[in-house]
Image 1 (tube, rainbow, N blue to C red):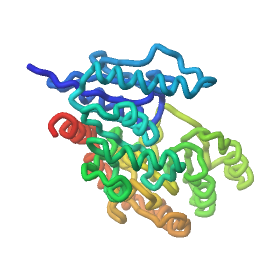
Image 2 (image 1 turned 90 degrees about the vertical axis):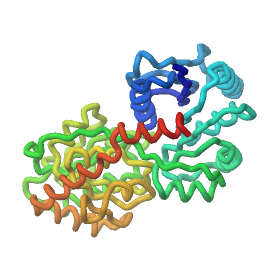
Image 3 (image 1 turned 180 degrees about the vertical axis):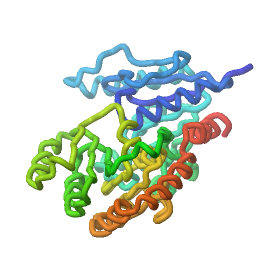
Length: 360
């Protein structure tokens, strides 16, 4: 049996969202008999945090990247990427990363290869002039562009003039769980960055002030914004130490999903928010800002959760109160959420990637 070679290209498999998705795809693809999987890591620190199957053939440069000579080592990485992929001679290539996809396309320019690129950020993200122009020049030359949402597809179609734009969402980890274990907890999970508005969530929750309810925030500092200390000071100033809990970065999110009754997201911008899908898989109704993009792909307003106009904190508060005051409504919406999110199981999402990369 002839096996087709599939090449997965990403800077590294460090801890992160797009890296986790890539690692999950390696496990799905490794179960297929008709493909030989190559993973090429080429970033400054091409390390592997996520476990991958032993059958995956991993390639990474032996040369250590020295940032003092950034231009030289960047060019060396371009040459490395071109050489190793020419040697692999894959049937198709999948590249992840809104900045790194341009690097991959540039490295492989002129080669007769089927290259699919996927951005993992909000489609409304603003890039600097140079990188924006590079994307406009290179993306139309890709064999296909993979968007995470339908809205992203529409925006990319106008930006890149590439007719082969496909929509494939993220695989969502299905947590399930026993609904009888749920406590009166409103949960939010995400990096402590300004655009996620954790401070506003705290203020809204404290103003609602329902006895017995707790707000749990899981996530650590990021982007050098140092928001953990600011949020702690806010909790202290509101006298809310007994009902608002900052848990920091955790590696056991299932513990929090299984015990929580409501999930809230006040993020102003997303690519594809996995945490919303994970909460839904655990049977939790979600109240989320209807931001660009992602929440509206998973949440049907009033059916399995609530979509709220961005920065409309009055409506956000009202929807949270409605759920906090009605256990029956929480159970009904949570059950619907769990059922609907199975669309994003690794089996379904992995099959979409496989069909596109191998069978198209």
